[in-house]
Image (cartoon, rainbow, N blue to C red; front, top):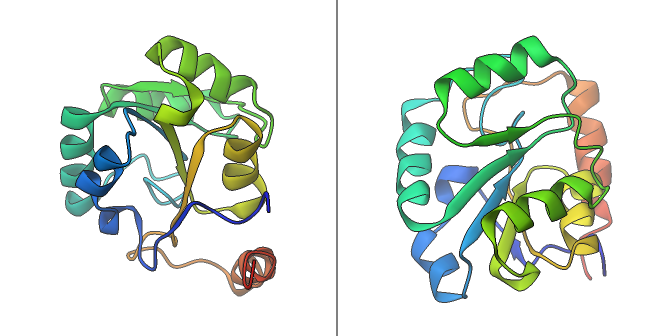
Length: 161
């Protein structure tokens, strides 16, 4: 099923076992930005997320594919990170995923897409033939109740598949 991730993480991105991904043959990671790596519109990494990202960058090719269209915000992210950031990704479109896979010079089965949304990150990664990892939003993040309801509705589709 296209909404069922290859890996379902009970926590946030910092709970992903980097060694497990490497043992599965993963050599590249494409990360979602908002709610996965940083709180939306914050352009700030938590110390835990920063430490996880440093370990990931030592082990894998890493880039960000975000649907965010705000170039000022994306430039702030680019200024704090040393990895490629693709905005306006239009996920679940495969275009950004294919671009980054080509930049990594890797095949789809060697790349994992990590994100918090089944309908954008997981579906897009699936459509591109990549492994997919669904995480919860950042532990430090508080989101409006309406957004949590939408997120929970999306996740209904991955249960029991």
